[in-house]
Length: 179
Image (cartoon, rainbow, N blue to C red; front, top):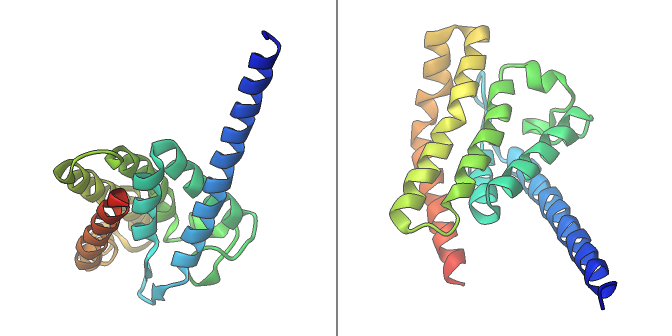
């Protein structure tokens, strides 16, 4: 009887780890697909990625959201064309959008704490997570275009979309929670 319990526990852990890895991989693919839905803007395109980042965290929790973004970034750095407009390779992380790509990890992690919260807390956490991704994004972009232009082109232009995508993420999260 004592031999069965450790084997069952080990098997359960292996299954849980496999499920976690599978969900992270699926999330990374959803993030890659959302990167291809893009409005060409300079210096940073508008995509559906931030919506997906919020949902990855909010539905999976902080660790799963972070793992999905990490898998996405690893795929892109490895050369898969997963970044916006099919970009790939390590150069994407050091280009003008590099800070936003890293900000996705922070946003997914913070959005993960919205899981299981009431409506008001979810709204605040999702908005805070969405705004958090702009911190490294705008800071990094400032090295390319200067602080004032980075704030304008890298944040202010995105405020309406941020509000809409955050509201949509909240609505989807609430709808899925009811199911």
